[in-house]
Picture 1 (tube, rainbow, N blue to C red):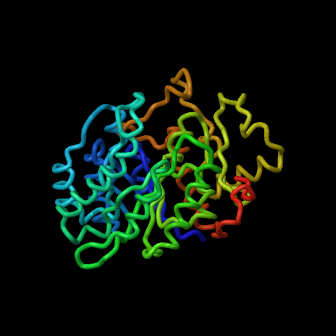
Picture 2: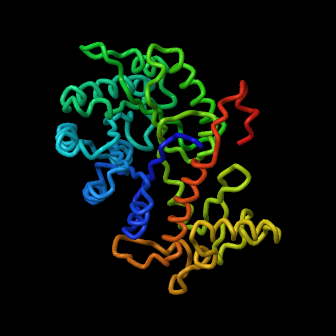
Length: 337
């Protein structure tokens, strides 16, 4: 069993959120866009104290939209509601403007500005929140900034208890694994080798067999469901499979499986409490799968996208519960993800 805590990220309809609550799953929201949803989940936590709630700053979303985050407002928000949050993320600095190439120095300065933001915020947070408030190290930044986090000590000589590691999302799984391997090598040789780590945007959970993150977040459970894709845990791996009744042209479609494999997948779906027929179904009033959009007004959980999202969440948790940690081989190329 993998010990990594999984936070489900992204906006989902209320029916799906209620499923996650009943299952006791953890949730991540952006304070920039999702404060109303966070408020709802705070009330859920009062009733289900075992659930965990992760609050992200929304820095990347602000960057893509050309907005700025009000640091003082975010600090005040965390001080007011931080008792509900299990992890809180600094406002990290993303250089330049979205889709605009910047001078090299702008990118070199970014981790320094992020670190200054972290210290500025931490000093103004209630001390009871410090151990749950995390800085973020991004792939592409000089590793000296990761080492800076690891060697940091506050005025009382205490190290950071929790840090964030953010691999590039638009790259191969093997590339992300190489970056994570190097980050963890430096963590283990530092003076803070037992620091907790959060892996951002972990689209491929199979990495967790080899990299021992304390926690990760993912939107994989949401995105594929819109286009008829489910996540199936077979043969010790979690793999995407298209099941939509109108998407049979997909190379990874359920319909191309042999009879025994189809039976196995159907059994996995039924054992998880879902219906293969409903997961495949598309609302006949919609012209295409892409147009089947959900929002908080939807209460009918038989909607196929909602059902696939729920199934995907359950599959991801089952993968974590049934997979053993094996650690890294000497060469990442030998993993074959």
